Amino acid sequence: LYQESLALEQRQTPASSERIGRRLAELALIYGEQKRFSKGSTYVERLVPISDNYEGKEKNIIATIFYIYSQELTNSDSGDLARKLAEKALEMGFDPVNYKK
Image 1 (cartoon, rainbow, N blue to C red):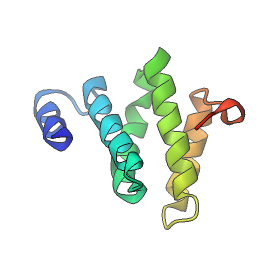
Image 2: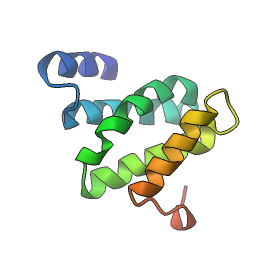
Image 3: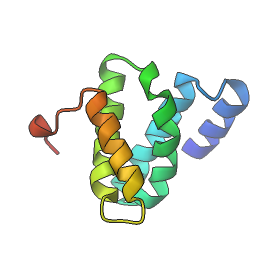
């Protein structure tokens, strides 16, 4: 259902749209909850270029998604993506010291 929602958004709005980013974040969260980080990383990677469009709570949520995926992908074949996500999370203001799972 979320993938269908993303497909619909992509047909109706520009690729840099915050609405598309929200669908990407939702899919990343779903795959993360299922511990399918490799599958979810596709959506997270697509979210990176538009992540600067967000503010406030949305920005914090996206930064947290990036951090969680960076930790989960660190020892995988996606090590470069993990580093990129960790850097972006910190750039967006994520504080790993005060993060509570």
